[in-house]
Length: 212
Image (tube, rainbow, N blue to C red):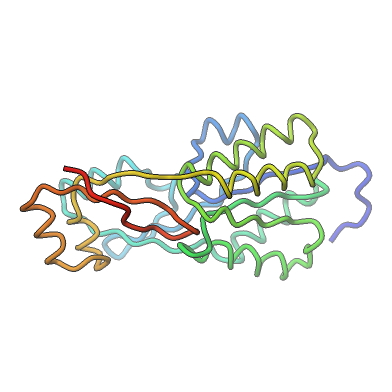
C-alpha cells in the first residue's frame, strides 16, 4: 500500500447496505456503501443497486416470495478499500453486528489481503438497520468537523453502548417461510393476533415482548 500519505485527505467512510443509509445521504456525506447480496428465485441481486426494500416488501406480500441474503465478499471490500486508500489516509468501516452477519468477517479478511491493518478501522456496531446507520451518520458528521480518530472512536463506542432498537412486526409468516420460526408459532401468533416485539441486545435480535 502507498506509504507517502502527506497529500491525502484524512478519513473515508465505508458501511454496508444493511445500515439503511439512503443513496441521498451517502452522496451528501461521501459514504461508500458496499451492498449485501439478496437471493430470490435462483437469482442474485445487489441490495440498493438491483433491488430495494420496497420491491422486496411488494414481492413478499404479492407473491409470497422468500428472500435470503449473504455478505459482500472480501473481494468486494478490497476493491472499495484499495480505491479509497489512494485518496485517504485512513478508513472507518462501520458495519452490521458480527452476530447477525458475516459482513465484518469479510471486511477483516479484505483488510488483511491488502495489508492495510493500520489504515482501516473496522467497527462492529453490534446493531443493524438505522442503529448502525446512526453510528455511520455520527462518524460522517464528525469527519466534517475534523475530529480526531480517537474522538470518533470514542463517540462510536458510546453510541454502541447506548443505542437501543425496538420494533414490532405484523406477522411471523415471512420469518416462518424462511425457516427462522416454527410454523406453529406463526399459526398461534395469527390466531391470537399477537405482534411480537423485537429488540437488538448485545448484537443479537431477541423477542422482548408482545403487542396486541
